Length: 236
Image (cartoon, rainbow, N blue to C red):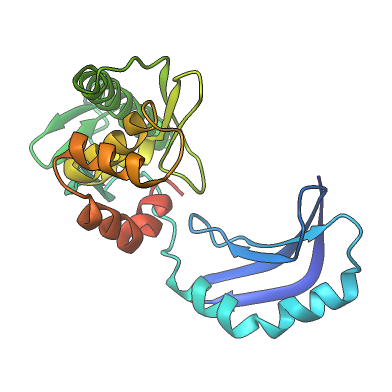
């Protein structure tokens, strides 16, 4: 796969983004995408596709691209005074220089001290630690109810998926699920554990996921569609 920056620049809301062209041996057709985390605009092409017609096609989609960009939330740095979501509720970062460097939750505040320029990194580490603790416990409990085993449970920062399950039983989640309401996180856990029963998205899989969750999960999926971009903006 190769990448190169091209000339077109797109503007929407507070975002100004160049078009990045990606050539991929796996691509069978042209594809445009706007990254929901930071608004990056990408045009994927088959390896031998001519560039000029592809750029003209991308330009013809300018109105769509700029409308999508305008809906991408501005990045939300994890700095002193910022308010972030934690399990669906607001949590304010309360930096107190004289306080201990250890991050601790106190009601609706996240309190920590130490150097100001390290606040963001320490809050991010705290959020990821909370995410893996919750997701590890919930995944293994749900797997026990399903009568299946799981391998390693980990968190990352995938761009396009909230969770994934390998054929070997390893499950990966986006750490950003800890920002969402617990019910949304549980729905993703049920989805991934159900893949230990059915490695596809057919009717049997959906029935298993609904059985593990206790309902069909439509409300939780709708919440992620509506709020996922805001979750991706956190820590930008």
